[in-house]
Amino acid sequence: MSAQYTLLDWLVFASYGAILLLSGWWFNRKRANSSQDFFLGGNSMPTWMVAISVLATSQSAATFIGGPDQGYQGDLSYLATNIGAFIAAFIVSVFLIPKFYQQKVYTVYELLEKRIGPKAKRRSGLMYLFGRVFASGARLYMAAIAVAMILYGNIEAQSVIIATLLLALAGLLYTVFGGIRSVIYSDVLQSVVYVSAAIAVIWCLLLLIPADFSTIMAALNEPAPGADSKLAIFKFDLDFGPSGVFNMASVLTGFVLLNIAAFGLDQDMTQRLLTCKSEKEGSKALVLSIVMVIPVMLVFIFIGLLLYVVYQQPLLMNSESGQVVQEFNGEKITIFMYYVLNEAPAGVKGLVSVGIIAAAISTLNSGLSSMSSVIVQDLYRPYIEAKNKSVADSHFVKAGRVGMALVSLSLAVMAILCYFWQQYSDMPLLKFALSVMVFSYSGLLGVYFTTLFTKRGSEGSVLAALVIGFLVTLFMQPYMIDWLLPQEQRFYLGFTWQLCIGTALATIVCCLGKPKLGQLTNE
Figure 1 (tube, rainbow, N blue to C red):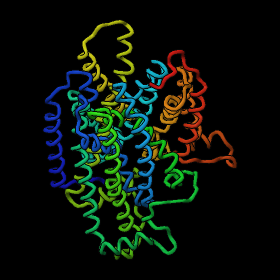
Figure 2: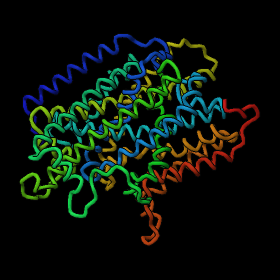
Figure 3: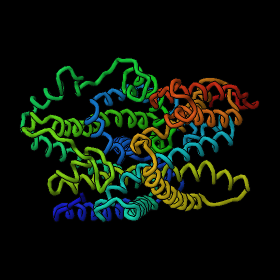
């Protein structure tokens, strides 16, 4: 099997390429000349744009593909996680965003320097960089798969590597001159592209299914006699395993922690909130982004529900039941990509491929900007200042651009490693991409809970908490459980519960440290 793109598909690609070139020139025509403008957009970005940028940063090629897969294999319960997101947004808006604006920080980790010490800032920044390279590199790899299909009609190693390098270069050129301002403008554009692609797919699937909307919904509500409804949103069963991560117990615990970390401790998202005019506007942007996530995720999950009808409801489709072979050139793919490559109409196939690329570029640009800001503001600037060197502020803008280039190269290398890693691993890359930041989040949450709500913590205990959070999460992974424990003692926890345990232990460890004299204030 190979991807067969028509002339109409290639016209879609050409149009998108032209839009990228034109918008890239337009967004970067005004170069950022100060570090405050390069990393914070001059604190002048409109609230609605920042909200869309946060939305786009939370989406990715992994979400574009994984959303439909969740609908196909599961139900609507993923939407319930937004309850945890709203709770987390309230906590971040009350306890973190005001402090970030009061202290006029460039990165979220600068708060730790003022409360505990410079080593705490550097170590937390390095933990973030470590996790983000893995997570964003995996997302870049997924987009490279789509590009390889477009350019070469296969997903062989050489094709994927070239596609990865092209994407990394495109993302770098798109943002290297304008900084975070270009990233936010780009996010708005890319969001329009990939949401439009998803809506086009829904339209095509509705035309394909020979039934009215009410009949489709009835089939989804009762897919088989006695089967659970695929329209279920709230789950109240108490399942601590990987299959129970979307139940309400998990939503009100692990997902609250996950979103606190994502919105308030992960520079990738929080940097956007720091570009608003005030802390009030930053909080508004955060809440608005969650409101917008709900219909966007519903669109992607609904694609999977319709694909379930197409491939798993033969009576409704007036067809014979048959097994769907989800492969592309011998490689296993999701049901969504199977549909796109085999049955999507001309033009829509190209639009979906473009949508995946748009989601990837949006996420890639976010990583370039946020990781570069941490490298420059948390690592490089303190090094220069410690040497008592007097340099102009424009020097750090240039350093930020060099940092973006280094990050782009690092993510490309990680994406290429993901290709070979997937060949020898049974763990789905999609699951890896969505949950890998838990390794970093556990320790960071422990450190920040200690910083915000206690008078404890030291530079040494911060390091210990970050290490403990990482190791505890690592030892709860299925492959580690299988390696360490005999079969009768093995247990498997969902990643949200792993986060809860890792955060609790990291908080306890961080609280063991005693602050230095003069650092007994949270301000």
